[in-house]
Length: 364
Ligand code: MN
Image (tube, helix red, strand yellow):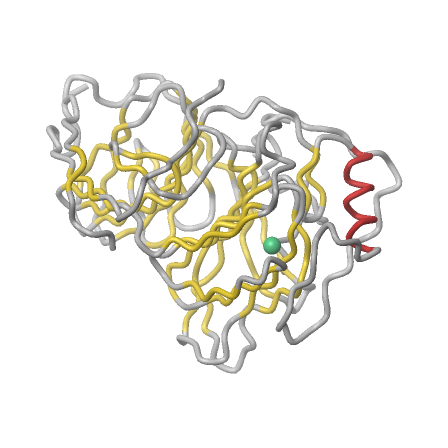
C-alpha cells in the first residue's frame, strides 16, 4: 500500500505543566438490547517528543472494521435528555477499559433546562466528561464543585463509591454537546478510595491538518496527566478541511473512533456522527482524511480481560456485589456520601431484575 496521508508526519507534542503521571504501566454490536438500567444518570508549549511515522508501515492490511450502531436513550425518561449510546454494544461491550459511551448534542438549550442529572452513585469505574460545546457543573460527595468547558477533562474515580450530580449551570452557552464515558477499573483499583480531578491543561499533539488533545493515556508520546489504571488512550482529534493524517497506534491496543462533527474517512468508511467504528488491534497506524473540518474521539486500550457486571451506575464483578451497592445507596449508608448544593432529589436505584445478573466479557 502506498504511503497515506502526510507520509512522514512530524509530530509535535506539548505537555501540560506538572508531572505527567500517566497510566500505570501494565502490571500486567446494537441496537438491539441495551441495558435500560445503565444511566449516567491548551497546553503550554514545551515539546516533549517528535515522532516520525514510517511511511512503509501504512495501515495494517486485513484490519478489523466494525460499525457499532448507537442506541437512542432518553436520560431521565421519555422527555429527558437525548443521548446516543454506543458502549456497551451488543457484540462489543468494551474497547480497552472503556465500557460506556454516551454522545449528545449539539442540543439547543433555548427554553430548556439542559442537563439535569440529580445525585447518583458510582462504583468500580472512572467517569470521563468531555465537552465539545457548552458547560456542565459537576458536584460530588467529596465536596468538589467544578464547572467544565470544552477542552477540559473532568475525571471522577469512583472506586469504592462516590455520588455526584451534573447540571447545566444557570449562565450557559446556547449549545451543549459532549460525551460521557466510563472506564472500568481493574481488580487492583476498583475498590480504591474515590477521587476527582479537573484537568484544564491537557497535552496537545499537532501535525499538518491535525490537532489532537490527549485526555487519557498516551498518543504519539504525549501523555495526559490524568490518572488511569490500565493501559489506554482517549484523545480528541480535530482535522482541518482537506487533512490527510496518519496516527501512530500501538498494535497491542484495540481502538475505536467516534465522529463528533463532520464526516471523516477511515479506510473505506465515511464516519458520520452516530455509530462507533471499532478498529480491532494489530494496527501500527491509523489513516484519516476529511474534506470538511471534522472532530473525532479516539478510544483505545489493552483488551480488558476481567468479566464485569454493569448495572445502573455500578461496575462490579458479580450479582451479589450489585445487590450490596444498591442497598448501600438506597439506605444512604456513608459509602457514597452526600452531594450538597444540587437543587433536586437524588436518583433512586431501579428495582433489581428478577434473574441474577451475569458477568460479561468484553465481547459478550
Ligand atoms: Mn454519573
